[in-house]
Image (tube, rainbow, N blue to C red; front, side, top):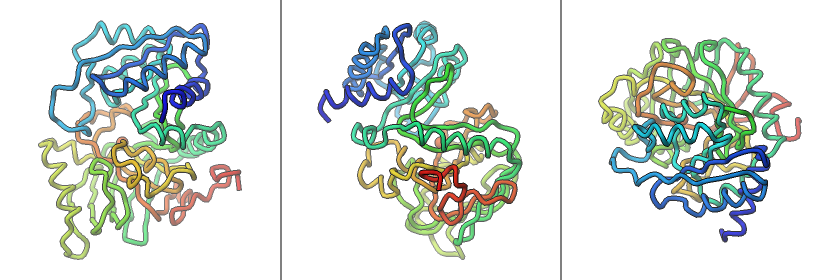
Length: 347
Ligand SMILES: [Fe+2]
């Protein structure tokens, strides 16, 4: 994407995010990463009359892998955190999510937009107000529910006890003080009670293992008791390389909280493609979290929702073809959203 096109989509993004001339927009990057994004966001902020600056952190020095969450480059850097708290909006090009520093910046009223995906994907999944409204319909329904049950033809049958943690929306922009979002995105989620997730999840071929950036090839059976995964294996005694890889990955963190059940919800963007990983293997998988009718569950921390689990072991798994019920009412049936107000065009 050439610089003019990147400028243009960043200008559209900051317009959605309500940036105006009385505001200060901070842009945070790390090392040499996404310097072009930083330039385009600052250009866009200036076009909208806002003040702007770019804070650049040193390169990451640890080798814990791209998916170990919660350790931000801002840790132990209170002056930098204080500076970002003064901004009206922070554009995060580093992926601060799950860090204490991100929560502190949000608590100060600064809204945060994370932007780390490849530019062509940002352009193709530009947010829309219509999609935001449909995500917010999901939020209204989800926050009233007390149980979520997920089933699939492959043998998934798991129930989450709800009502402890808030629901969260992601629709790809943020114009609300203190609110975080991620561009691109279109989904809604919450978390089960800490000891309130029980049942079986069977990962089927084509479900997505996001930290591995791969699709499941061999079915994987997960047994969940009182909010924690207690067993990971192939189905009906069959060997499963995917089960072995998943089990090995979680075990490597040497943290029992890595087996916890994290966020759970469904995706709503009909433009997002299930096969997206084949097109953007270097991204973070936001297209896969967003594709229409996917049911995504997650393993690991729940501090994003206000819970106590802040393990760095985090694993998102969008699944195809599932059904999702809230208090026994169908919301997603066989991978299709059945609530009219959440469907494209309201039909
Ligand atoms: Fe996640």
